[in-house]
Length: 120
Image 1 (cartoon, rainbow, N blue to C red):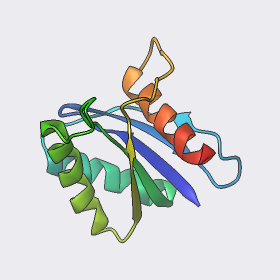
Image 2: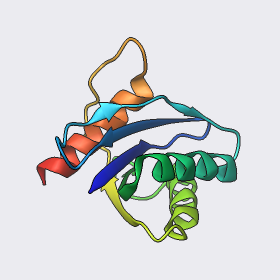
Image 3: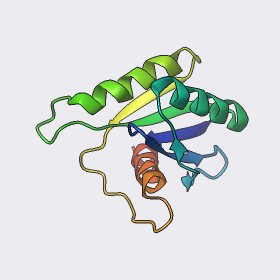
């Protein structure tokens, strides 16, 4: 199954992809967006193009483990994407350490999330 990971931000969302053949997370272009709906439309396009069967989404919990305001934004995107009849796994991103990338830290963070998901 092809898997897409998202590190969702209010204006920029990192994207990583792993295909079922090799299972290696590959950074994709960051999605720049203004609204939840705009982000969801961009993700839906990727889902269709890459025949994605599952989404992994980073959940930005506070260090205390409580949900802050950013979690609402992430979950609202997830609710829209659930309508695509695709599996979604939310992963606590508090303790993920993204590999630094000079080109795209957002997608590097998405790669870290996808790596964590694939290891479990």
